[in-house]
Amino acid sequence: MTPRTKTDMIVIHCSATPADMDIGVEKIKHWHVVDNGWDDIGYHYVIKRDGTLETGREEHRTGSHARAVNGTSIGICLIGGSNKSGDWENNFLPEQFDTLEQLISTLQDKYDIKKIIGHYEVDDKKKCPSFNVKEWLDNNGISNT
Image (cartoon, rainbow, N blue to C red):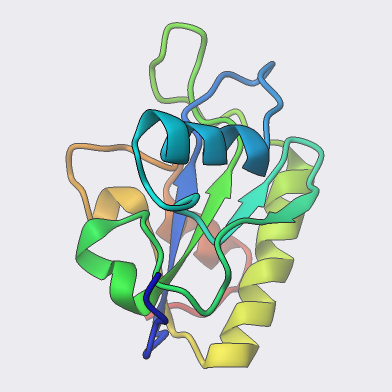
């Protein structure tokens, strides 16, 4: 895997799983490696239903989560984001949003990141992460350009 030489963005994703499916890094890594044939999990971080933060791909490595910006971004995946029918749904828990807020703050301080987006802003065929990222950032006082 190639080291990322520039980090100027965070891309927020969801696992597109229903609220009662509490998975984590190992399951997503299985999907990405075994099912998709990738060399590792695509996301750098995964936030489980209870707010537990799990490390996925090593942070300094180029991700595989949003093709157009993989080389300059860190990918964060929240578990959830769809209903039992597979339709997009904001079913995330407050604990997940608390962890997301803390992780964003840490990454912004570490890399001086100014731009935070949802996956849907890179791939208009998706509604991932199933919530309006800009609105959430604004409502939580998180700076974003």
